[in-house]
Length: 397
Image 1 (spheres, rainbow, N blue to C red):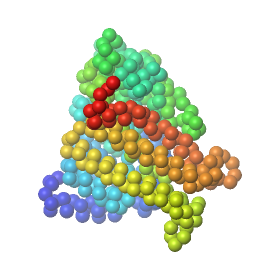
Image 2: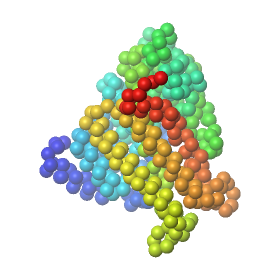
Image 3: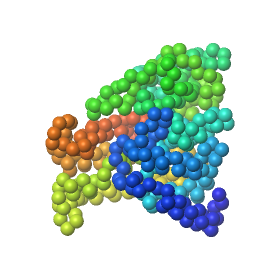
Image 4: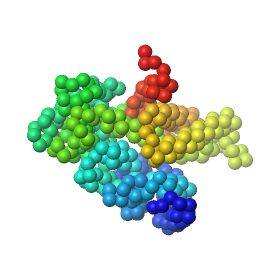
C-alpha cells in the first residue's frame, strides 16, 4: 500500500472499522496466563473465539502483516504496519498469534531462507498451523553456545544428525524445530556451524521433560538418534550458521523482553482486591507508590519497544538493542511478580488444597517461573557484557 497521508488515513479508518466488526467480544477481558495462541497441529484454544480471531486475522494476512503476501503475510509497508499496530492497541486487542515461528524463524527465513523454504513454511506459520521450537543449548553448551557438539554428518543428499539439546522450550508442543548443528568437526568453534529444519515429531527425536521448581515442565531435553535431514532443509550456507544463529538470538531476546507483561490482571486491580480501597484508590499509600512506579516502568518500556520496532521496520539492525530490551524487560517482569506476591501476602503462597482460588495458585507458580526470565535467551550477566562491550565500547578484559 502507498504511504501518502490520504491513503494511510483511509487505511486507518478501514482497519478500525474492520477490527470493531471482527474482534470477538469474548476476548475483551484482560488476558491471563496461558491464553496466548501459539498455533500448531495440537493447539488447544482457551476459547473458540481465540481460534476465530486467529482465522480472521490470518485471512487478512495480519498475523504477520509485514511479511509478503505470497508467503502468507499482509504485505504492509512500514507505515501501514504501524497503523495496524496502533489500531489493534487502541481497541486493546489480543495478539492473534505468538511464538517462535512468528517472531524468530519467520524473519530468519525471510533474511536467509530460499524461496522454496519460505513457500513451504511461512504460510503455515502465518495461519497458525505449525508451531516451532528451538534447538540451541546443549548439556555442555549453554552460555557458551558456540561449543555445541550436535553432529550433522554429510551423507550426500541428507545430513545424519545425532546429539542432545537442553532447555528446549515447549518441545513437546513443537511440530518442527530449527536447530544448530556442527557440520565441520575440525573447524574453530564459531565456524563449522549450520542451521537445519526438521519435523520434531519424527521417531528419531525424543523429548524428556525437565521439571522446574514451579512444578511445571516448560523445558525439555531433546535427544536425536540418526535423524535424516534433507539438504534442502539447510538454512543459508553450510558451515556459516553462526551469523544466522546470532540473528535468531536478537529476535529471541526481543520476543522474551515482552513475553511476560500482559498475562496477568492489572496490578492496581489486584491491589484493591487484597488491600481494600479508599475513594477509588488502594488504601495503602506505600503500595500505591510501588504500583505507580511499576506502571511508569511498564509504560516507558512499552514506548522504548515501540521505538525499537520503528527502527527495525526501517531496516536497522537489531544488534545490541535486543540485549538491552531483554535485560530491562525481564527485570521489570520479575519486579512485577515480586510486587504481586507482596500485595497478595500469604494467599499468594498456596500450592494446593482449600483456601486458595485458581488465581492465587497460578500466581505462586508464575512467581517461581519468573526466576527463569533473566536466564533464558542469555542471562542478564551476558546481556550486560554485550551492552558494555558493544554499546559502551568498554574493553572486554
